[in-house]
Every structure is written in structure tokens, then in C-alpha cells.
Length: 384
Image (tube, rainbow, N blue to C red; front, side, top):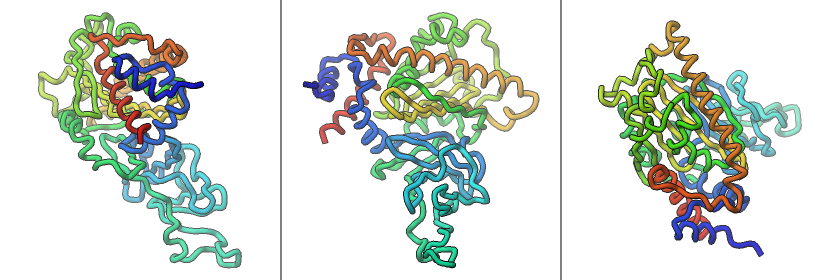
């Protein structure tokens, strides 16, 4: 007889133990996560630079829901359910652009505007009349999703019950005020298929202890991370601050890229790294913002948007092309290293013995905080 997984998770929490291994591979756990953690609050789905132009469409799947992110006629980002109102066909299955501002269903050619309104339903009455009337089309538009965009990250609330987004994000928004959002300029956006549980990706992002080992290009020695400080911004937002870059690793030179103008001289070397529960990861450096959006697809599969940003129009000039290319190359190298590590970690950490690991007080308190938050939210959902 199978032991109740949620009781095992509760016991691990009460005993002060790390998450049991099955928490990273169990289908029942993943089902509860999808039905609650990624629906009840604010989850990110991608970044705005993936729909950079009017009419751009970016389909995503999260929490068992198929969504369509787009940029509308007014240059605003909207999210709709990726669902034709006729027979439920998906309107797009790959990143693309709506032709002439119309989203056409590939099943029966019903077409929608970028505002979600139904524009046409050919031969709606099965006669010579080519279109449904305005009255008949009313109420058959695309179903909207509650959406917010912050620092170019697209957030959704699928339950429609979360507090206002501004209230949710305010503590981090205020903390990052000097990394002025208005100065952000897109550098790159790449899609990854990570062969690991989404929680392992979050934990790895919060883990500065691995930097000298996995990413020696960033940190040549452990001394470069000894001054890292854990930070709890709110119940949902936690992270780490590296007060002196990566300890000014050997070979690290002053970057010619422009820095955020709001940074005071004594702040200019700081790196701040945060996880916004459940699935948004953000890092800010003096000249860069990096974002990782996680979309869990299965217990051991996570789709990821990996995006980079530079600062101000000055960063886009021809004379800084080499620096832009190097920033992108370096960021992808680091993310590739993490993706490879996570693919190796998934089958071992998810073993029955995976729970017999040890979180150290010196390095892993932020990871412990994330695990406790996940446990509390999951058990509260399972007890409903």
C-alpha cells in the first residue's frame, strides 16, 4: 500500500529535513502544484521581448493550461487562453506573427483580432452568408487571462483570486528601484527544455555555493562568495546579495557597458539574485538584468525562458557590439552549464534516498526557506 505522499512531506517538514526525493518526481505532487501553486497566485509565463512587435504571438503551457501571449494594436501585452471558441483548437503552436493583425484558427478559420474579439466565422449559417453578424460574434471572443507585466516579465493569475499584482511585487519593486526598469533594453531571449524538476532549477539559482565549482568563469575561488548575504524580501520573495560582484575574480575587468543610472557609487558592484515564488528568477548586476521564467511540463521536465537585458540606448550602439556579444555568450555558457548539471541531478535527487541529503546552515538557508514555503503552500492546498 502506497504511503500518503503529503503526510511524508509534512513529516519531513516537522522533522526539519530536506524535501523527500519523490517530491521532485511524483505525479500526484505535480498535479497539486499545477492545480494550486501555479494557479492561485501570480506566475510568470515568459518575457515581453518574445512578443516585441504588434501581432507577435507566443504560445505557452503552464499548470495544464494552454495560453497565448501577444502584443496588441496599442502595443500592450495581453494573454488569452489558447483556445478557439468554436471547437477548442489551439490558435498557435509555435512563436509566430498574426497576419494583418488577425489570429486565424487552423481548424475552421474563425479569426480573432489582437484585442481578442471574434472578427469572422466563415459560413456561420451554412449558406451564402460569409460571416456571422456582430451580435452573433459578441460573447465569442477569446477568453482573457488576468495579466501584469513587470520589468518585461509577463505574469498571469489563472484563478483570478490573487491580490493586486502591484501589492504582491511591491517589496521587490522598491528594493530594485535603483536598477531602473525604464532603462532596460532587450539583449536576448532563449528557450530551454530543462530535464529536471522546476524546484531543482529554483534551488540551483539560489545556490551560490556551487558557483566556484560549476562556473569557474564567474568565480575562480570560494573566497569570491564568502560575503554573500541571504535576503528575505517578503513571504514570496527570497534571495541572495553578493556585495562585491563575484569577489572581483581574477581577470574581471571594468565593463564599458552603461550601468543603471540610479545606482549610487557604493552600490555599483552589487549583484542581487531573487526567486519570486513560485517560478520567477531574476538577477541584477550593475549593467545587466537576467530573467528565468520556469514553466513546469511534467515532474522531470521544465520549459524555461532565459532572457537578458542591458541598460539604456547607449548599450545598443555599434561600438559596443563586441561587449553585447560577449555578455550574451557568457550568459548562455553559464545557463548551459546549469542545464547540464540539473539533468544529472534530477535522477539522483529524486531517488528514495534523495531526502537523506543535508542543507548546511552556512550556505543553504535560502534554499531551506524556499522548501518550507513550497511545503506550506502545497500542504495547505492538499488539505482543502
